[in-house]
Image (tube, rainbow, N blue to C red; front, side, top):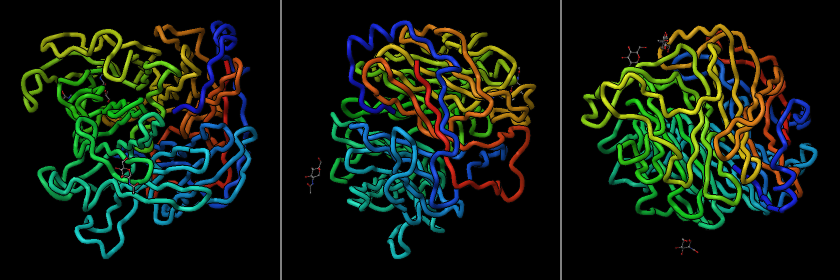
Length: 485
Ligand SMILES: *[C@@H]1O[C@H](CO)[C@@H](O)[C@H](O)[C@H]1NC(C)=O
Ligand SMILES: *[C@@H]1O[C@H](CO)[C@@H](O)[C@H](O)[C@H]1NC(C)=O
Ligand SMILES: *[C@@H]1O[C@H](CO)[C@@H](O)[C@H](O)[C@H]1NC(C)=O
């Protein structure tokens, strides 16, 4: 996600040689006082291992206002706090989206914000999902007041293909001023139609006045099966740039297909087991800031974590042209991919050649060690340079195939990568800064583009599952970190 970026020749000239380093990482510890308590730890699907609970963060195009969203520690009500983008201190009053069960994406405007959450439909709703299962919904607030609210699933939204609920809000919200559209890409489970009882994903577009618009070749009622990873970024027109990780063995750039068919672009082969593929985009509470556009260009960078791929075999369930692989490594490493535009990967696609020994020769690796890497994110400084970040644990124990791992937290790492795909300088690490919300590019004019994100200052224990009943950690303070070049 990017804020405004004014390109100047001066910034280009100065920017060419600058390299990130630990001395350019600034922290604002416990700077933002919250009106309500927040639980920063979310239990991962299947493993129960701790993940950072996402706090969506966005800055307005004029750079004057910023917002951060967080789920109340009671697990109902999403709060949106306005903050000063220079000091990160709270300003204005908290807006509460009553009934929100998870904060799934935030867009800041000069006059307010739009937020994607999931919530139960009113009890008198005909054809609502059973058992008050939450449904994805987009809200627009102007000057602190709700302007409109648009359901993105449930009755009245692609009824004939099957109605969708979203028990977990895994996905993202983006906005294109050029297109005049919001786009939301999120995990769904259908409760009517052919896909009833199955998990998949949906892409929905909403116009600036809150009207849900169905766009041929862009909107999608059900795309990637058992989606556990989404990366989504705005483009100048629909379809927006989309990536999914599915349960059959691939990560697809599916801007063209919105699905998992092989007329999309296969970014990666991943071993899949029990519907999972190694939480490539962060798993539960992930799926943000994994895909970023280089400012003023059509280019994108995507970062994920992967166990690599060997022994390519035919996927007999999907049929000819689709494959399964075994994982090459125990822990996950950080990978990235570049796209020259929203449909086109730079370099070869992942192989679909049955019998191939190497299924990952197309991957650009950022790391290659035996530590397990997770929570990978990408952001861009401007048209030329990007930042990729991830966490590592040493001596990882990976109890479950194709899921996350546990072990000693070894730090949050930062690596600069340029538009040619070259690693610029060495990575550095911090052991007390984490990435737990959207990484936003701030334009400070001249060469001072910086990338900032929210986190909670706390001990980060990745050595064990959260435990029965979930995490009881709560906080009333958020911290921010910024990195300049
Ligand atoms: C809202 O926007 C849509 C799509 O741009 C347009 O077709 C519709 O007429 C607008 N509705 C109103 C009430 O302005
Ligand atoms: C994934 O890898 C495991 C071994 O780690 C293997 O048992 C399983 O068959 C693989 N999945 C697929 C779909 O090939
Ligand atoms: C594949 O990954 C699983 C964990 O998902 C691990 O137990 C297994 O050892 C890995 N296989 C190889 C060849 O490293």
